[in-house]
Structures are given as structure tokens and as C-alpha cells.
Image (cartoon, helix red, strand yellow):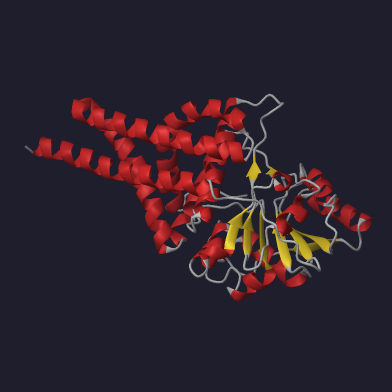
Length: 379
């Protein structure tokens, strides 16, 4: 009797969460059909400040800065880089750029944090926001490459009433040999971007990325910047977005213009990937209640798949329920993802969806558990 109840509880929970997941994917698919490129042409052009927080980035920051300083934006723009207690050659590289571009390039040196537990990146960004002149703040990371049209394209998205623009970034794999780990990261990252795009389109911002993000300085100040979240180590991007979502979810948009896409590097080791994913998961409990509920239901759907798979050997009915839920999730993921790949012009990634689908649930479940418990490392 007890075992029969156990079987029906597993099947019931799996069914409820799987149906919720499927319903959400229908909404995401429909929302992707509503995204469009911005058409703002306000004159005069707003002042723009490009902000980059850097710590021990001597390996790739020079290439990043060369791409950032090649902008074709016709209005006023400047670059600020925060050298956050670097112990390698980052400071020398930044000094070289400051000498070469004395009027456009600025370095903010951070020698210590104001108090224990403060997020280094949030602290660096807050300092740069106070120092810069821009009305629009464009953020990227010290290991990313931007196009010369990046700023111009992002500014087109700031139509009247828009306070925040989430840009698109991806891990390039086309026209180069990529190992399995990089290729899997590329498709997983793209899934997050597709979900983020659809979520913002339906006023349910699920995720964002700090390596291609822009917002008005006036908005940043109106919500007191990172106040109340300054000690949360991750979330310099979507926790700020959540502040806007709680008040004006319609005041943000996702940029799908190809001339604004940013490329980033994947993690070269499984350990590095694991730490990054745990860090990403750690901030989700601080989202708005509505979005926490949606993410909790997604997590429940994934964890029930893992539980059903683990217990399916004891009862054939559980196995059938698991197989049905897995197929439903896989088909839904494929339909939404394919539409997203067409929007972002990355159809070649579809071949990696099947292997990723197999490991997606257990990997995500473990990352969320460890991330929420705070068990992750950051440089």
C-alpha cells in the first residue's frame, strides 16, 4: 500500500511540473514572435559611458579594449575600466591605453573593498557610475569582444520609456575547432539567452548577462544602484533587472540586432564551468516573488525528472511517466530553441541539443543546490 502511494506521488508531482514546464514553453515560443529591433533615433544623441570591471585580466583585456575603442558611435562616448586589486600585468596594460587615449579612456584603481562581504564587481561598477559622464551606461566584461557598431546599435533600443536593454552574447564555435565542453557551453548559453529574450518580451525577465547590458544612469540612481544586494556576490546584471521588473517590467527589452552581439569565451575546464554555473544559480532566490515561483517550478520539473529516473527501476509506471515527461520537455525545448537560433542566426548549434538535453536536468539541479547553499568560488 505504501509503495503504491509512493508511486502515485512521484507520477503526480512529475505530471504537474511537466505540464507547467510545457505551458511555460508555449508562452516563451509565442513571446519570441514579438521581439523586434529598436528604432530609437532621438537627437541629440545621449552621452555613453562604457564600463568594464577587471581583475587579473592580462590574458585577454588588450583585445577587448581594442574592440571597445573602435566604436563608430557619433555621439559622446568614453571608456572606464576599474582595475580591481589586480596582481598581474593588468595595470600596465591599462596604463598604456590611458596614455594612448587620454581623453576617452579612464582607469579607476581599486586597492581595497570598503567592508567584508561586499561584491567586488558591484562595488567597482558603483564607483565607475559615480565617476563617469554618460547618460547611458554600456557594460561588458574584460574577456569579451564587441563590434564597432555595438554602442550605436544598443542606443537604438532605448526608445521612450525604456530604461534597460539586455544585449546578446554568445560563445563562438563556427569556423573553428571547438572541443566538446566549449560546444556544449555554447548551446547551453544560447538556451539561457533565448529564455531571457522571451522572458523580457512577456514581461517576465528570467535571466540576463552582465557582459552585454545597458541602462540609463538615472534608472540606476533611482533604485539606489546595488543597495540591499551589494553583498550578494553574483547578480550585477539580473538583480538590477529585477528591481525594474518589480515596478516597470515593460521598461526593458532584449536586443536582437546582430550588430550588437558580443562574443565571450567559454570555460576551458569542467571545474571552471561548474563554479560559474553555481554562481549563476546562487542569485535566483533574490528575484521578485513571481519570477522565483516560475524558476522554482522549472527547478521542480527538473528535479522530478531526476527522481523519476532514479526510481523508475522499481516500477514500470514511473518509467513510462518519466519517458513521457522527458519527451515532452525535449520536444518543447527543441521548438523554442530552434526559433531562438533563427533569431540569433546560430542554427548550427542544433546538433548539440540532444547530448545537452540528456545531462541538462541533473547538472542544473546540482548547480542550483550548491549555488543556493553558497558553495562556489570566485577569483
